[in-house]
Image (tube, rainbow, N blue to C red; front, top):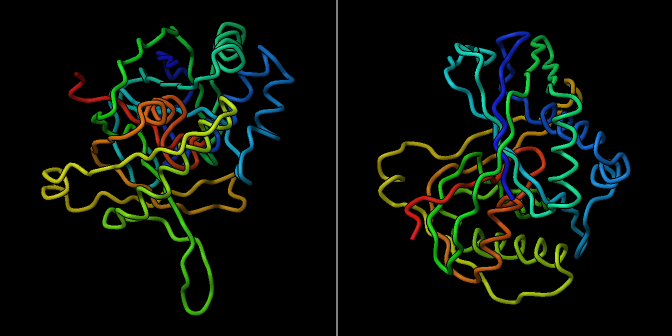
Amino acid sequence: MRLLLTLKADEGNLISFNYHYHLSSAIYKLLQFGSKEFSAFLHNIGYKLNGKTYKLFTFALRFEKYTYLQNAIRLDEPKSFLYISSPLIDDFIKNFVIGTFEKQTIDLTELNFPIRFKIISVEIIPPPDFYDEMNFKMMTPLILSTTREHNGKISQYFLRPDDIDDINRVLTKNLQNKFGALYNREIIENVFLSWDKDYLNRTKRITKKITINQHGKFPIDVIGLNAPFSLSGNVDLIKVGYECGFGEKNSMGFGMAEVINDH
């Protein structure tokens, strides 16, 4: 299920480029109003399968009108929008909605840029119909990684658009694990991603480096992909990706996609 929160910035008009950690923390705080136990479980433990941990939600923040400055985003209009997605309706969605009514604000302290949003409204976004072939565009960058040898050492490698075989292998396993963590059963079928070639040809760069910054401590750099794509294969895996987020770092606000050219 997806929610759309309409927000209004009522304190501050600057937000850091690297707001992801702080907004994720604010979401957990809202969950606490509905269930402190579930919020703590999700934050500290999560859903585990095959040595991986999944939080099974994602989000995207949008601004009505803004300007990129050298070290921040300036909100030229206070109105903003927060999209939240999770298949965990009883545990996540209901508790989150309780939090929005109880607290009615989202507070972000971004290093030197404190900002507070008032929650104006919360509404449900109707789900799309799901098919075995669908077109998507990213609302937030897609992060996929594997390990590769470099200078004699095995290290994490973030996949680029040309790494299509690894993209399909890693994405399929990611969605299979999320499905298994949700429903406690296995899907062995695959999904296959194809980039929008016209978009790639007219866009110089679709990779983006993002820093996940926890109050200035232990920053983590990731590389995300941002381009429309088609996805074919098992419809249940496609649905899981839409609801939970595609790829990695979903609970930090990555991998959220919306359907385009629906049937």
